[in-house]
Amino acid sequence: MAARRTSKKSGIAPGYLHGYSPQEQERLYQQARFLEHSVFDQIDFSKQSKILEVGCGVGAQTEILLERFPQLQISGVDSSAKQIQKAKQRLKKEIKNGQVDFEVADALKLPFKDDTFDGAFVCWFLEHVQTPVEILAEVRRALKPAGVIYCSEVLNATFYVHPYSPATLQYWFAFNDHQWMLKGDPFVGAKLANYLLASGFQNVETNVVTHHYDNRAPKKRAQFIEYWSSLLLSGAPGLLKAEKVTDEIVEEMTRELDRLKEDPNAVIFYSWVQAKAQAF
Ligand SMILES: C[S@@+](CC[C@H](N)C(=O)[O-])C[C@H]1O[C@@H](n2cnc3c(N)ncnc32)[C@H](O)[C@@H]1O
Figure 1 (cartoon, rainbow, N blue to C red):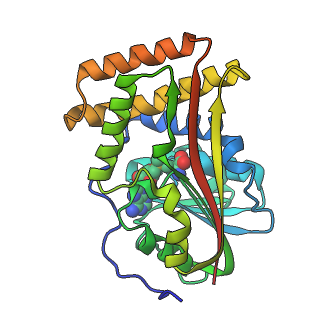
Figure 2: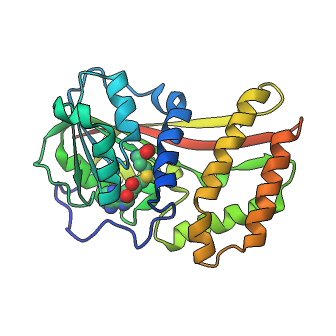
Figure 3: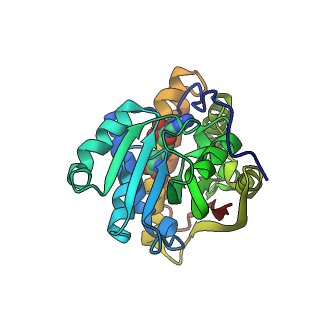
């Protein structure tokens, strides 16, 4: 069994790929709604009352959690004061009602006692940290025995698009390489079960969620391409600043994505991983 206590260094990676601009904060709300069904269809917090949301960002998932499970009392933490400020504005009423509280905290040093929560929710978060096992062990410390955790995380090696789009692929490589250099992990989804086991969780289950859109569902395909374009472009300011891509690559990628939207035979494919486990 892994130790209940973790060493107390910082879990915050040296950079954050997406940044904290108002546009990026708005994108997180849109992303959460766009992916709501795929993220929440397998999540059941109906038997929980007090849950922890780690890396809660602007509260985009918190809002959905409360709509789906109104009995929940949620504590959200994020290392960014800007994200927490936005979350507090957005969920003012719910904070007043005592349904939610938000706090700036590093996930590696959670400001909660052992055995506080009966559930934890982690979404699009572990890709941004440099010590996932230590952070998961810290979440486990704050969970009661048999508390359930759900993690939804990216697996960026799975992205495929047709027709062949070289600028998009070049940009995508730079996007993932940059995240890796910032000590994040754009492939963390594949390792979720290993990390949960290493941090002392048990009964680990994983589910690969695939978005595969082609001529069977042209409307959904168009919507997914639109969403995917906004995700790709969210990294552009950081990638340009780090000189990982040029303006020409970004412009060419934008043209390719526009062509893709119009192509009657386009295919877009992407998978990510959702894990469920229990703390003991
Ligand atoms: C992509 S956002 C996801 C936000 C939210 N889970 C969602 O799905 O909308 C990742 C968040 O993780 C936060 N974060 C990164 N490292 C952290 C750490 N060590 N402790 C707490 N939050 C962290 C970032 O500030 C950012 O708000």
